[in-house]
View 1 (cartoon, rainbow over the protein chains, first blue to last red):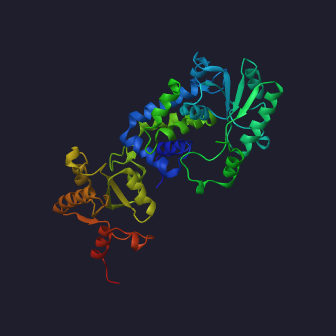
View 2: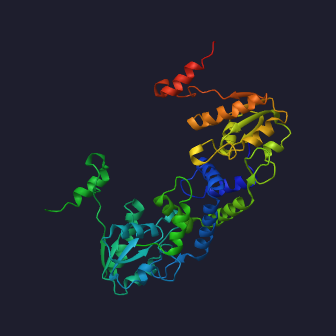
Length: 197
Length: 197
């Protein structure tokens, strides 16, 4: 059986969501049309409004509908600290830790020459300009992947030349895990980064 | 950190999708806005169109934007057979088996007196009327749950009184499974329904 055209169109459109395959899309379609048409209309409206009005913060480049995101606009943040992350979701993760009170800079990715992503695409110039505005320490919190490490290294060099303090978040054994299941590279980093107690 | 209002609105709206919790909704929001705004707009349009234009088939009550769904409108289906299922998704499941060429009737649920769902809500009168239109056999394919069984039993009695042939799909051990992991009730049904070979 083929679906009717509108059902087919909705099932295909739902597949743009990450982690949604054909079966989930079908289940979502039937659920929305049978049980929650109001929710579906609310979702359609939220999607349209967000796409049309959410842009980038002029200062930190995170997602924001205002020219300045709430964090950059806040007077309570420590403007001497700048945390460099890859994505807006990373800003959120750091914020949720509650351990950081400075500002952010979102690269929007990492250096990846093969994909044509160079310093310009991740806004290195804007970052260097930001760092000159009274920033005392830049904390590099790119992902602990090969690309993230390379990006941190590249940016770190440039900032050091500018005379700005640079640090990298610590890598090691995550809390709550079991040593037995931690991979070799992480353990290597944990051992290399050991501290006297 | 609180999200900006539009991001918050989109994250909450995405939670109307079955199986999407706060973390997935956040991931979907960032993915759509950062990587796939066209997909988001396409999804918004598909949702609106589907909710506004998809209704029920006049004949079988499945989801359809036309007065008659493609199955009911088709001249190739065997109009002497009527398969009774609970939801439009069940129609699809039976169709995908490729083993059935008759028509369907979608109850839209099962009898559940405690939830106020009686014969009227599941369209029993419409079903009895349908069964009088030259149907020789009604196959009851409600779910193998307590409510589904009760619904099948109730409808079966009414149809038999009308002199229509009634059957229930077989219950037993599903194919490809291992006997060791099949539950007791299923095995009981499989033994009771055994056939000489």
